[in-house]
Image 1: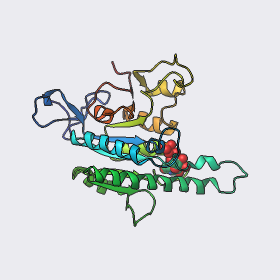
Image 2 (image 1 turned 90 degrees about the vertical axis):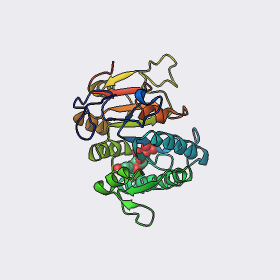
Image 3 (image 1 turned 180 degrees about the vertical axis):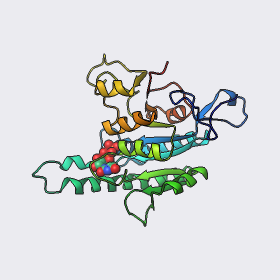
Length: 274
Ligand code: UDP
């Protein structure tokens, strides 16, 4: 199959679903399989914990690591951005009477993402993936500093890059970091892993009649105030036309389905996907 694009394999049409794909090695199914060249996988901290719990579950982390390995084996470069909500979110300390300054609490939240990244690194290495953690705040004994060119080099060498500490500044979330790094590292899509099948009209756990959207535009997400990612992240993706796929990582094999462009979850872009 011929795929047109610039020298990086990017399709000149930013809204094209099959953009930034590369051809798989020749196998019986290879003609059917399209793979994003480079993706950002955004995992919330809660995805590392047992459902409804806090902290880190070895089983959950291992399950995600196995899925990432499978996705990586499809030929896609993977950048993992991990949150810290299973341990601490800085906003929990907002308010004039909080004993911990909110900015301090956000740095604590960033450290939580470092803890999660370390767990994910060991799990990935245990299943045979080479990795590097790159942190946006200084934690030199456990992670490299985030340097864009070095991150690109790691990806080219086939390493999964785990980005810790978001963007290294307080008062934002790792959703914003995922969007920001997608632009910096020229990722083709932001894959937002959730525990539900995609974006619903309402909370499906509260309203069983909530509708699952197959596709949305950035503007629809913002106008309907849908809880997808924070507004800064959506705005950054909209500005540069980076698509977002919201999908259920709890269904085994969905991470590889996401990176191979299969029709799962809710796809968000400049236009609805047909
Ligand atoms: N955080 C921050 N700057 C960043 C990224 C994260 O201050 O660039 C802090 C913020 O307090 C955030 C916490 O780290 O609440 C944990 O990240 P997040 O809430 O995104 O985790 P998730 O909800 O994805 O588990």
